[in-house]
Length: 207
Image (cartoon, rainbow, N blue to C red; front, top):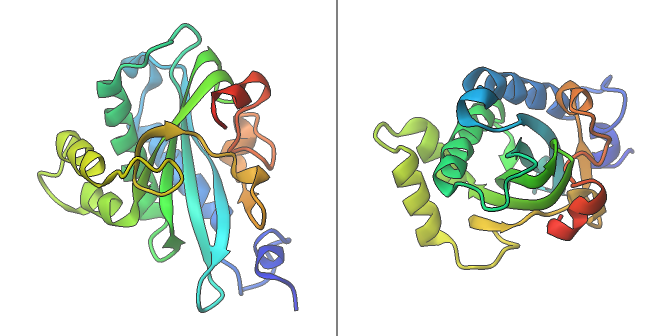
């Protein structure tokens, strides 16, 4: 019997797996519709991958959907007000697309001080728990300020466990027993199957 990851990353002919590529593409399309890079003064944005980090009690995949924003080549100190606005938009794009999937958290990554989504010197992330993501999407009046406040209150300064309010990026493609699924969106952004990582010098930024 094929492993969970083999079913997920195979040819898609089995009904046993979850179509993570389709969900990623749906989230990416929503993000593109919600965020105009020019209006935010950023270079690009995409939903770049889905990390399969474990499996649940019913052998269902436990995943981390990943969105990424390129803030700009000349940006050394990002405007955190803009960062929080973009993180909220990313959550609003990803959470509905992954309804019914076992999500560990949503990873919203920000590259800066370098070119494009995968060629930056610096990479930081906001890792959003499912509970907070659900509030962002479902609760009226739970706006960016409330989102930021909830994240800061629950962040215990451990960059490895969500929620993470502003920490170093994680390269899921290099973690043991983890696979990264990428759909058409990541391919269009120039990503490989390791699309959740920084490329080149970006590793110095914590990816």
